Amino acid sequence: MAADPIHQFQIQNIVPLLKVGAAEIHFTNSAAFMILGVVLTALLLLGATAGRHVVPTRLQSVAELTYELVASTLRSSAGEEAMKFFPFVFSLFMFVLMSNVVGIIPYTFTVTSHIIITAALALTVFFTVIIYGVWKNGLHFFNLFLPRGIPVFMAPMIVVIELLSFLSRPISHSVRLFANMLAGHITLKLVGGFVVGMGSLGFLGSIGAIAPLALTVALTALELLVAVLQAYVFTILTCIYLNDAIHPGH
Amino acid sequence: MDPQAAKFLAAGLACIGMGGAAIGVANIFGQFLVGALRNPSAAPGQEVKLYLGFALAEAFGIFSLLIALLLLFVL
Image (cartoon, rainbow over all chains, first blue to last red; front, top):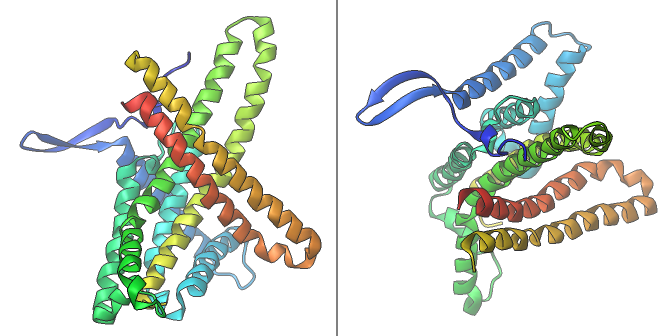
């Protein structure tokens, strides 16, 4: 059997930063790849918009397409008023997208394959929705838990169901992204392990290794699709949740 | 029963849930194809929703795979 497929998710300490009591704080490979994602995003967007041509160059149209994609998603699912959240939603999208796509490259670390990262992002969205919703709508925000036109005798049950579904949002929001990344990378590693295992069996084994090698290539393509899609799904769910904060009681 | 054996059995059982996700994903693409062949001109506008539905349905299969992986590697 090839190397342990979980090994790739190990956090390694690179530079020790400071020590608080018994806890040590290190600059880890996770932090390094987070910074790499942010730097890549900044380079892409700054480099693309440096020229500002009327007829966009290829790089500029990449930046314009991502901007338009997030802007139209936010506008169509949460309304024009939600555009004040655009910087937040766009940063989330670019961070998750860059982390996922960088993670596809062999020997890199996937930041979003750790639940602590995705849970932090999802909880930020969750508390943004609660705080902005209560600040903007006051107690009307809690209309969210009682849709209009519900018979009185059904109301207590509906409130409990809606409350539970609201509270489970950050869990499903974060686990969806994290589990997709984790499972995808483990599958790639396992199928890649078959290639090595077959190849070590001599000539006939090498011929047999062609099938898992082809499967690895196909799975990498699927993982690229999943990486982009999950970043988009994370963004669209954020937009839907923000819509609840802006227009409760729908 | 040997706890190690029970762990592997449980991981295998957890993967049954992925069958449900397979049915869901197949349903999404099949229904899209049915709709797209009836009205091909409307199909390109719905592709984003197609992939969104695919990703949402696939996630539930991944959840059950996650349980299997937790059983194998964490417990």
